[in-house]
Amino acid sequence: MIVDSKHSTSKSYWVRLVVIFFLGWIVIYAGRSVLSPLVGELQTQFGLTKAQTGGIMSLFFLAYTLFQIPSGVFGDRIGRKRVLVTGFFLYAIFIACIYFASSFSIFLILWILAGAAQGCYYGPQYALSTEAIPKKWITLGSAIIGSGMSFGIAMGYYLSSVMISVFNTSWKIPFVMVAIPIVMVTLLMIFCIKEKGSALVKIPSSQKTNFSQLFKNRNLVLAYITIFCSIYGFFVIITWLPNYLEVEKGMNKIEASQIASIVPWISIIGTILCSYISDKLGRRKPVILFMMPLSLIAIFSIVYCHSYIELIAVLVLYGFIGKISLNPVLIALVADNAPKVSLSTAFGLYNFFGMTASICAPYFTGLIADKTGSLNSGFYLAAVITMVGITAMLFVRERQTAN
Image (cartoon, rainbow, N blue to C red):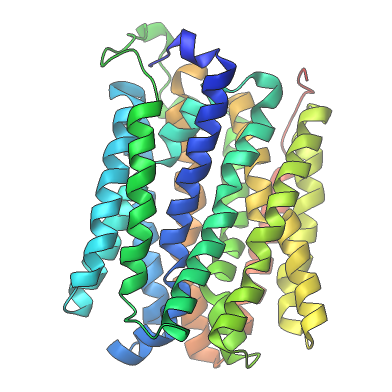
C-alpha cells in the first residue's frame, strides 16, 4: 500500500485530490452519456434494434466492470497513481479514435476499449481519496467527488445534442470533443497526485486481506447487493431516458436532453445534503433506508407522468435521492467496514458488483422494449430490483461512528 503521510495529512493536498477526482468523474460520465442522445442516429445508420443499441452500452460496461477488480488489486500492489494515469491516457486515445471508425465493428471495439480504460479509475481513486480525506469529512468529501458524475452526465447530454441538432455535425464529433478535457485531467493527475516515488510499502503477510475475508464481512456483502440494485435503476434512466422522452413523450432531442439533465443537476444538492446528514449522524443505514424507498417511487412514477410538471417533479425527486446521491453514503459504509490494507480492492469489488447492473440494465431494457413495443416495462423492472436493495439494507448491522 502506498501512503505518503506528509501529503495524506495535508489539508491542501486532500482538497486538491477532491477537486481532481471531481473533474475525473466529470469526464468519465461525459464520455458515457455523450452516446445517449445519439441512440436514434446509431439505430438509423447501422439498422439496430433497441436491444442491440442497449447492447452497445452493456458491452461498454462489461469491459468497465471486468477491470474493476484487477485495477483495485494492481492499485494496491503497484501504485494507485500509476493505474489511474495509465487508464485515463488510454481512455482519451480510444474515445478520440472513434472519429476514425469506418464501420460499426470498429466503433464497437473502440467503445469497449474506452470502457475498459475507465475501469482503471474507481478502486484506486476512492482508495487514494479515502486515505487522504479526514475521517470526519469522508462522506462529504466523497459526495463532492461523486457530484462530478452529475456535471458529466449533463455535459455529455448537452454536447452531443447541441452538436447534432444545432451545428449539424457528424455523430462522431462529440467523441473527439470530450477527449480534450480527458487529456487535461490526465495531466492534472500526473503533476498533482503524490506518492512515495515508485517504491511500495511492503504489507506484512499477517495484515494482507484476501477476497474470502472481504466476502465474510456481512455489511460489505449487503453494500454490494444494494449498489447493484441502485445502479440498475440509474442506468435504465441515464441510458434510455432521453430516447424515452423523444419516443414516448414526443419531445425533440434538445428538449429531451434538458429534461433528462434534471436528474444529475438536482443530485448535486442531494449528494452533499444526504452525505452531510450521514456524517453528522455517524451512521449510514438510516439515511440509505430513507433514500431508497423514495427512489423506488420516483422510478415507478416516470411511466405515469402525463405533464411536464409531473415529470419534472419525479425527476427532481429521483435526482435528490437516487444513485448519485446514494453512492457516497454507501462508499462510507464500505470504508467503515473494509480493512485499510485492502481499500482499493474492496472499492474495486464494490464497483464491480454495482456496475454489473450497468451491463444488464441497458440491454434488458432494450430487449423488453423490443418485445413489448414500449420502454415502460423496463422502468417497472428497475423499480422491482430497487425493492431488493431496500430489503438487503434492512439486514445491515451498524454501530454509530465518531463524528
